[in-house]
Image (cartoon, rainbow, N blue to C red):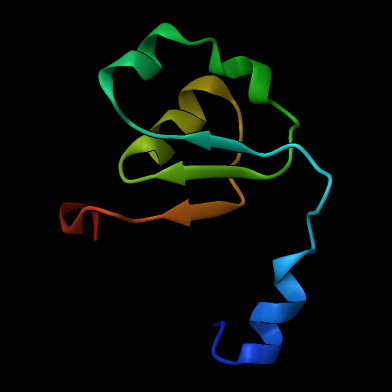
Length: 71
């Protein structure tokens, strides 16, 4: 668990210069070919979008929760 300022500072630039992908779960995500994310790093999923991982064969490293329904 991230509980110290030092830990957060260490993470702050840990992925600097790398490409990141943020997957939300709006209806438009169904129009995208998410299989292109297979083997990629730095994938952030939001709310219900982790449900797409198995279907499309990718794995997110980070999960962001903005809607309490997904607790």
